[in-house]
Image (cartoon, rainbow, N blue to C red; front, side, top):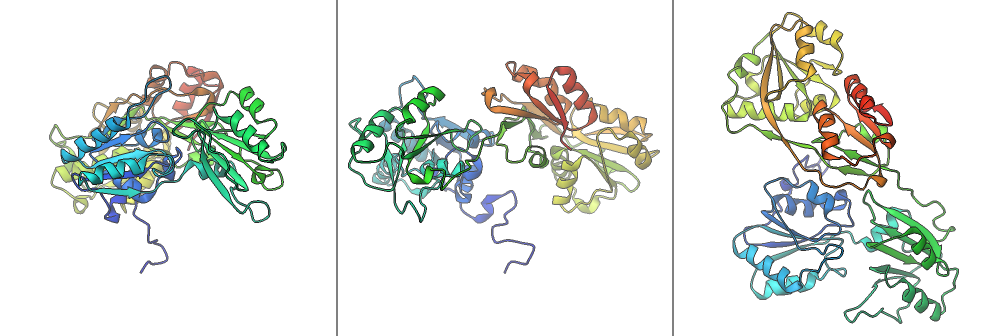
Length: 481
């Protein structure tokens, strides 16, 4: 029975504690939802994180793929604009090949696999070959897209039924003759003229409300409101391109949904973790996580010979950032040590490091701001001090500890940084950027040479980073912590 400070679904950072994971040779068909990685079900994430290979579509999967550990192989079977689509037969063959090789396979499909996703065809093919298949439903964009901007698909006063249609059937024709209060169309942008003409011919009023949501739940989300009479012109004027969901019916009207949810500019997160303070600085903003570096545990070299001394009574171990804490715990394990040997005092630089220590039930003796030399001096003066950080660290924090009188201030390497390729960003949708380390700030121009710095807000940790971000040319600089 859950106590009052727990919850039946409190599985921390490890959804595999639910005990649900693919077996070798199994294929799990997982719905990716409309695009937001947070809209994948718990069971879906359980399967994804336990997979050896993820065979994925293009739409709806981008943010999930950005969060996958590096050891999970990715096989893209989606269609890119202007390119020829991979045949369904070839997709079937890939799934069979991977499963028969003994891999744990996740077939990741945007939205729900059984809503215009051809998921049933893939399941039938695999089961005909006696390959085990599990199905994990997803959040369909048909309902999530209008919901993301505050438009319901039903309402007791005006809509007691809805129908979900595809813009084209197998013969390229528009489904017709379907009666419902609310009509929802997937893949309906190109067929919009025919959709409008069909509904008008069926007797719907030209003033029937319409809402169109493109790239729902992603940082690119955009919507517009119109009527049946004005929808085509509005779409042309706005330049809306697929993927988009078209909702036609009274639930899109002012009387039911008077205030549609806007989509503020996204926050581009460049660090290896998403800072908790973002919600205070940019409440409600979509997050685009594109880390510039990945923290890797050290495996190829022996643990530091200073590790036992750093744990002794009278010593200080200083942490800055989540990887410094997790890497330190990993080094303890590699050295055959555990928390029973920790007699030193612990200092956290910044709230993220403090929260991570507390997550492991380690209460830091002090929490410093990155540039609070006076507080450091008051704590560590004359005391042997180790800074748990990456190999080869040359940042200002080590110098500050030495200036504060630490005797000596010694580097304790506990992890390494690996540069990542963050990929392209559509900057017109981005308003802010997080910069939580000098490393990220230095790499930012190289990773994003087309970033419009003058119109972006830099959310920085520490006065030094704020100063450097201003010098680099960011239009506005704000303290993140």
